[in-house]
Image 1 (cartoon, one colour):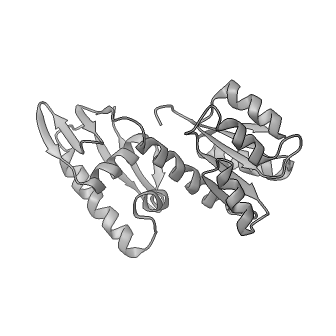
Image 2 (spheres, rainbow, N blue to C red):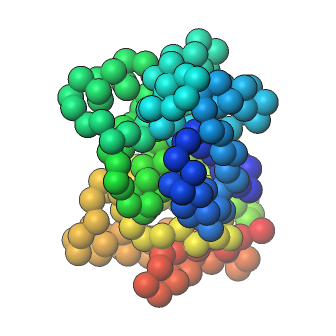
Image 3 (cartoon, rainbow, N blue to C red):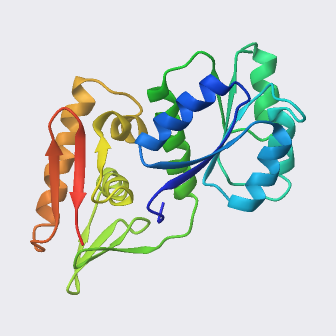
Length: 228
């Protein structure tokens, strides 16, 4: 995302759970708009244009499925995650048919919700047109998988390109190791962790012509791309 904060629209009528979700997301640098029913969620969507919607299925006035179906009439791309205690196969199918992108069964961990949100936002970004990103004195093209420094081009592998893009989207902020692994490798274990460390080392070498750029390892947390 190009904005400093990811904006999330949360529609959940259970006040305690809503407060937990809202506070957890806000500590991860999200901006959260909380709605108490389905109609309020629709109205808030058109007013605030959030980056992601988190919808409880069972809500007053309009349920989550109805909200998603309404939103999909005008916006085909915004990621929508359903929250529900209902987990039968037909419930999940109904969720996807109404326009949802993911379905999370209650109770759930906040870490899982956040990882799923970031994964959806990341996949959504991949569908956007290519843009040239400025990383210090470098120009970076994710689609072309290319770094250009003073008219000298370096080709990146697909994995290098996606890892750099992930770091860039969170530049000057810590991005958790687990989030990167889930987004790019699909799993978090010893082997994928070692693989990521190797790719980080490769990226550092390819960015070493600009002293203002640094990829630092935050022990037991993750990585941070420091750049102007």
